[in-house]
Image (tube, rainbow, N blue to C red; front, side):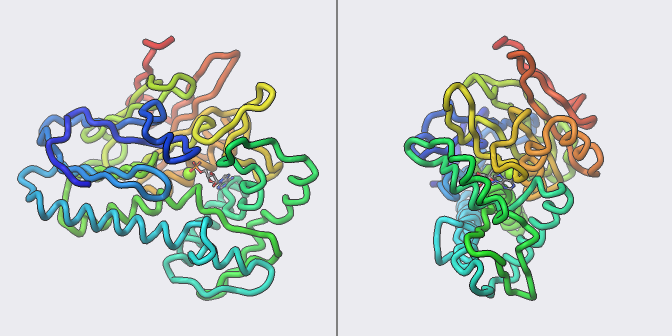
Length: 362
Ligand code: AMP
Ligand code: MG
């Protein structure tokens, strides 16, 4: 669906907690909201919305004097690109490339596209760099937790312990375009990186269309392109960060220029059992949800890096996570954590001047 005349302070849906697509239609699920900080743009961007990768996708083009028909065609192409990546990378199908790799785990190698080889190589690079905190072999454990079930339950400890040897990313063999999971029962899950990758490809499509000011939002992963700006810049977008514990309220906001931003939070897919919150971001060393952090928002020059970093920093936790952000050139981030029932935030140096906390809800 493509339209112009979008209201100036439009909401861009970020990081929706998905138990089903039904829940997507409640604005309370918004986790980040983006609005413009630059006033020298048309009040009415040309906009398109669709659903892909189990979430909302929105594109807004802010170039002045844009031809509506032409922009609509390019937005459709960007959506088609996202859906193409979904078809390649989903683990909810036995026929997608990832589905075929998983189906043949422990039996045979599977020939896949060069594109998927590159995406897996990137994923393994993040795994190495994070000491395994980022781990696309986490599939069997995510399935055991089954966060999307009607009534999810804490799996038995023995079951988790049995699965742990299957989530070793070093057992992913890659030889040319052939991928082999060395043990039966292994499975890849690109949920922590595929949306960021798809954002980048959609950004490329719109750049090829000649657009110079636009924002792609794929369910919590933003790609901002604003010619002449850098990531740490107040020229383009203002990002409102959802309050992790108060739906519909904002914890704070920051400004940014061209780049990617993603949030991983313990409120996005979770259930409560005996007063304990169990969420979808797994610490691969124990097979249980990572503890110590409430949400991480990561900014990077591109979407794939922002997506991987939001997940891996969450798993590494407050101290090690912030250390990794600070030690990685081009990355900025914020970590929200709970201390004595109060929410607090750690900010990377680049964000310190740009972030404004919203105290109105306290
Ligand atoms: P995100 O929302 O980007 O943090 O990604 C979370 C999703 O990534 C989960 O729903 C899982 O599909 C997958 N996942 C969970 N734990 C990990 C992990 N430690 N490393 C990589 N992917 C993970
Ligand atoms: Mg991620």
